[in-house]
Image (cartoon, rainbow over all chains, first blue to last red):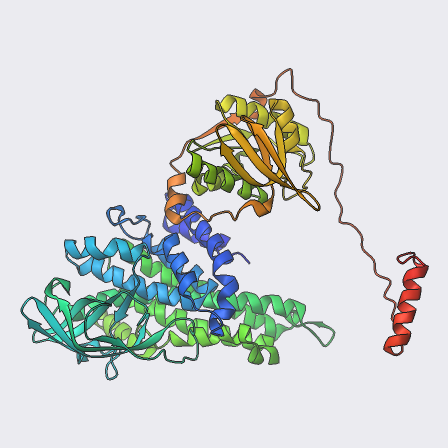
Length: 389
Length: 226
């Protein structure tokens, strides 16, 4: 099945009637590239038979991260919803590659939104063109979604900052050239760019995971790690607001990634339901299978629409934090449910075949990572209650 | 775009990168074939030329296709080399290349797997059944390539966007049909899949007995000679 589908084109037409043709050409080119270079390797990434390194590099060099950025940094200046769709397609091609790329580009977003012009010129073109890989180092052993409780410290010493602490569950750790690190200064949470070559920067072992096995996840240890004061992002104490904003966009993207995962599991289940025969007929003829298929596709369409709605609000410069959280909660939980139903349709084969249950294992991460469903529900409720007052 | 055509486009871009010059992408099709021209421009072509036909061309009418391409090539301006695929991926008649060389009065170097150009001489390797033939010709010439010649590149997203800004000239096929145009000699009257049937014979017994029965059956069918 092609990754870029008529429904993507239709939605882009609704969102951006004047640019639909241009965006569709770019996304169908991207899809053709991924169908050939990424999708066939996806089972091998899951079974750890092959590393994602070279596929990820080729995808980055193809330009996926250039999509939403201005041309002065080498970007394509296309709408954010085109990028959201690109990550959905990448999620369908391979969830681990998509996760690694999306987290990488969250760092680009942070530098673009909050970095100085010098930082943007130094780092942004390299990150979005894939010459440098980036890692968003936020979570700690004792603080995840609760970013205000950051324990990693940063102390100014002359023209440098000295960082101490441990970051946990960090995607791209050890592989990335740049680390966007949240640390606490006297004025509060503060963001820094730390280069891989910085003294005192070390990485833990690659953590074994239920899914998303192709993407590397490990500790980032900072022991008297020095970074230039020029690498302070914004001002001291602004870090919490910065990461909150970065996470809002990232949550839309993670939702979209899960839509892609759900889409591929759904397509496999539909194909199988038309082939598998029982009681003298195809299982797709049974009402209970049909109910599953109807619910799966309805969930996928609704999740995709929520992600694109939040993307459009962001493009228009409107408030979108609640919608981004809604998109992530709904899309990730829908994805887990759709992948679970796909296993059910496959029956015993679904439980034993890596190529079916890996989608459920991949999707399962994202009701936790980038804000748990529980924390996001808290944010949504707070926002909505504040609105209604 | 057919995968064979992608090989021809890729080779033309490689030649441009190594020897200079420019690449013009030319095709015959309905107006939506512009999308295909754009694809080739994204790969690295410099300009496009689309001969627009009112109805989908008959895939077996190679003579008309070759004639329209020949007239389009002449109108597109001076050239040194015409590259095309060994055949199309739908009917794979493999006739357009040789016919085109006749219309343009060019030497035809067909089914080549390697191309080199030096001092206006083109040198190609042609794969035969059990050997490789090396051919040379002076430019201008026409070459048809086989799929093993290269691995076509995927355009980057930036190149896809830039392709939209490259010029594509469209010309109606009626403007290219003149007195010299060939009559239509071939019309597709129908296409059906080849019917396959199996005999579904099962031989019972141990390995020795069943293999003997198999050989006997193959002999009686005339598959094996006694």
